[in-house]
Length: 71
Image (cartoon, rainbow, N blue to C red):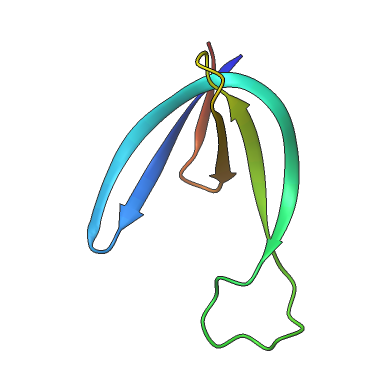
């Protein structure tokens, strides 16, 4: 069980939030969210999949603004 503190950015707004849950798995996901990249460029993000106490699954990307704490 961990608690993740991460930065959320929507448009010009940013805020910090915390999400807690049990780690289901970690993975490296390939995505194409970057603007004007070549179609065969490989872009990856590290992701933690958490299960909340209510049973909801949440995928959180881990970057330099993410802090992990034992819960």
